[in-house]
Length: 67
Image (tube, rainbow, N blue to C red; front, side, top):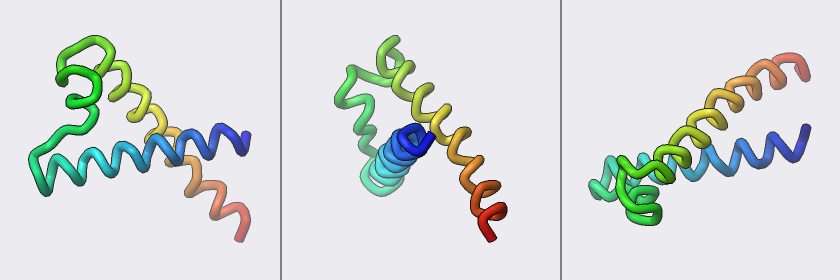
């Protein structure tokens, strides 16, 4: 389970960096690396990062249970 947590955290960080680049510089790193926003592969990347973000919500519940 710990490995999955690290993978999710890395993907969430990639998503956060990507959104920061979009917000500050109007540059979409995922689209630049994987061929635009509407290609099938880049949509899969966005979906995986989104699922990792949803999974990361469970981190809050685990932090509460540790206290």
